[in-house]
Length: 280
Image (tube, rainbow, N blue to C red; front, side, top):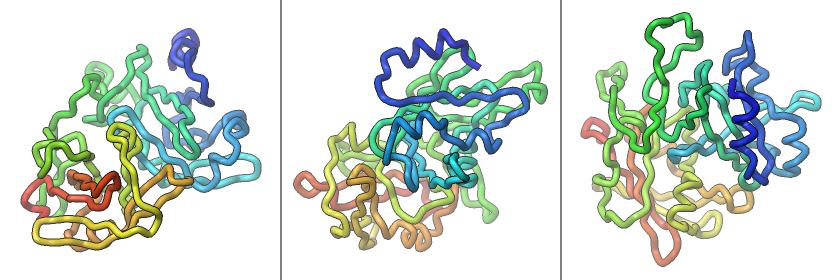
């Protein structure tokens, strides 16, 4: 757990509602209490935490988590929270700082107990109990600004899978190097394709009205989809993604590079680049 002097310094210039999460003795990151929102945070963000939230982190990834109420307490549903924990390989030395951004969006920063902030994707699992490897402690995250490949996973049929952290130089996949892009790693929920908020901010992206047509562009293929706007337009996404994943047999853990094509100022197509030949 971070000392109070450190947490106070981190949030001293934060004007928006925020809160911390860290482990107490006997807890792990999948304990039910870790899925709850502090009551004072919920009160300070009226109308923002209704059905779901979207977490975004420093390296551009985002997660959608659905919410549920138990009497007066508000929780993230277990499956979604566990996915966030697993994807970020949270361990006993991690501290999470949640900051309300806009409507249902929260920015999440991860700090180690020594005060170092994690600014890149996790590369390996940190043991939940330090006693597992008392003489060889491991850091579950990179602390530089560039992701690199360390390991690859293989599915049961032998097809290589690559996670977001394994994608080297994703800009090399782009048809037009000036186009906006992001790396999408498939998770349990793939009903729609969300555009990460950091990408929207970085490129100043604009989207058509809800239900406006768009397309997924693949080698020799073009798949129709629709633009969807949630959260008052703060959460743009595209449907038709689940059909694409099914058609090309994309599995949980697979990554693709999504290159955004614009017509005028509006995003009208997503060009999907497979990371390796076996995905085609």
